[in-house]
Image 1: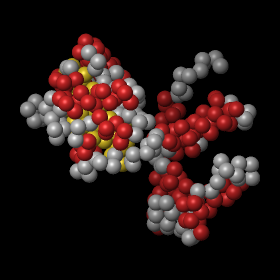
Image 2: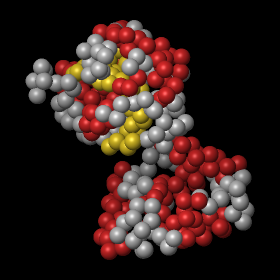
Image 3: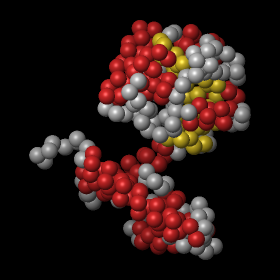
Image 4: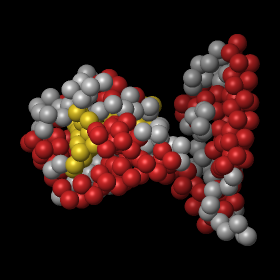
Length: 323
C-alpha cells in the first residue's frame, strides 16, 4: 500500500492508552497523527512509541520492522492539524467529562464533517459525550483495553443517535488491527467494566469476610474459571456445565445470600422450558446437542495447551521468588 493509498487516522491523547491505540492503527496500514495538550508532549510520546516498538520487536511481540513502520507512519501534530482530513479520530484523553467535552469540541470544529469520531471512555455514557460533538451521528464509543497493542477485545458503543452505517466502518478499522469487536448498548459501565467490577467486588467481599486471602483468591481465579475464559465466555461455560446445575448452585448460595445470589429470571425461564444447555441442544447459545463431542474435544485441547503455555511462561513476577 502506497502512502497515497493509506487511510489517515488521528488519536487525540498520546499517553500509554492512546499511544498503544496509535501503534495498533499504524501497524494495521494507516498513517496516524497523534496529538496531546501541546505538540511537545505529542512529539515526546512519538519517540517513546517508536522506541517501545523496537523493544517489542526485540521481545518477539511485534514484527521485526515495527519500529521502522511506526516511525514512517506516525506523526505528532496539534489537535487541529491531527484531525484535519482524518477519516477516523479516536479520543483517548483522561477520564473526566469536562476534559473529554472540551477535546471533542475542538475535534468537531477542525475535523471533516464526515469523519467518524470514537471515544475510548471506559465509564462515561456515550450519549453524554455526544453532547459536545458536532453531527453526533458519526460518534460512538470505541473502547480498547490496556495494553492496547496486546489485548484483542474492543467494545463498540453507539449512542441513541449514532448512524447505523458507522458501525461496520469502525468494525473494519478495528478488525484490521487484528482485534475482535463486540457491539454494546450505551449503559453505565458498558459490559467490560460491569463484569470486571462485579468480580472484583465479590473478591473484596470474600477477603473482608475472611474466607480467603487476596493471594489465594487470585490463585483460584487464575486456575479455575479464569483458566476457561480465553476460550469461552460465561454463557458458553454455563451451557456446557448445564443450566439446571447452575440453578441448583444458585439455590444453595441463597441459603446464605438470598438477595446477593437471587436466581436470574432468564436462567430460571430457560430451565423451566427444558433448555439446559449443550446437553439439551438449547440454552443461552443454542449449541446443537450433536456438536457436544466436538466442543468437548476442543475444550480439552484448549485447556491442555493453556496449561503448557502457563508452565512455559512461569509464574508472574508478583512475589519474591523466596516467598
